[in-house]
Amino acid sequence: MNLLVIGGGGREHAIIRCLKKNPAVETVYALPGNGGIAADAVCVDIGATDLDGIVNFARENAVDYAVVAPDDPLVLGCVDRLNEIGIPCFGPKANAAIIEGSKAFAKNLMKKYGIPTARYEIFTELSEALRYLETAPIPTVVKADGLALGKGVIIAQTRQEAVQAVTDMMAGGKFGKSGTTVVIEEFLTGPEVSVLAFTDGNCVKPMVSSMDHKRAGDGDTGLNTGGMGTVAPNPYYTEEIANRCMEEIFLPTIRAMNAEGRTFRGCLYFGLMLTPNGPKVIEYNCRFGDPETQVVLPLLESDLLTVMRSCTDGTLADTEVRFSDKHACCVVTASEGYPLSYRKGFPITMTAEAAAHTFVAGARLSEGRLVTSGGRVTGTTAVADTLADAVKEAYRLADGVTFENAFRRSDIGRRALQAGKE
Image (cartoon, rainbow, N blue to C red):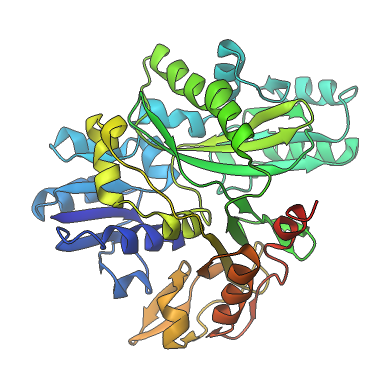
């Protein structure tokens, strides 16, 4: 089989390595891929949102199956376009990808169908949002309605911060069209959990849970990033909570989307908060999370391609989805200055051992050598029998990844390890 994977980050690298375990896979094309992915796939310089270019390439290169990984092409309708030329895909169509593409849609869906989430208000006029903030409970959460590279959520600790966030989004164009509508919602407390789930539109099979580390600095300080590391499974996500989430959140969401004529097939990501009043949805994503994928897929024991195809053709209920009972830790090595400004173009050196366990996100090839080209450059993952061993091994391996101006958090997994002692 010839496979096509849309995207070019660490998540896509993890997906490609997992897909290649299937002996039926002959060629994997990555559009656009990156310098590190080039070691595992044929990278083609066609952007993930260049739908015409993607369709033409797929038609001309006998692609048998496509995996659309990032949010932008999903929301734009990449799956719809590929389906039109007869290519089956893993990922939702545009009318279902709206569950991530519009936070206002997602919040209204949850309200309509009784899915637990934070209380909220939606605003399209700046003056109305500012008037609401005069008496809104503080802290509060301000969210840009549309896609914003994972950076469109501001937790405002003061009324002044909330006013600034809303003004930046609605009047300052901080997130372009994505911020012309904002959602202001109740601030929830409790452990956060990420759960990715395979679904064919009827059956839901959750993957192993994970814990992301969004803040740039140790101790969860600094700015929000796309994620500085992850561990799996999440110790707060007990079997009892998992069962409750299935009945109160996962299945009701799939049924709600069906009722709205927006059947969701692919990977649905549930960002959850385990509040004192039970689990609640913080956000939905219409695809694999990054860097959650880098710890979840290394624990998958079933064949990924088989599972993906069962989501596409509606046979997930009859397909085994099995995960190891081991633990995984991913440590991200980033460019100093991320998530704001940072310098690029530094040569990357990796030991052979580190390279075998590292997914490349922000790097390109320059004269045959891998150099930095992004904020999050690599994610190094280790799997072990215990979380403590996985964390220790991930850091040991990550030390084999070096480049000028590199930085990483030193406490990935610490909260999870402390949770296990509570």
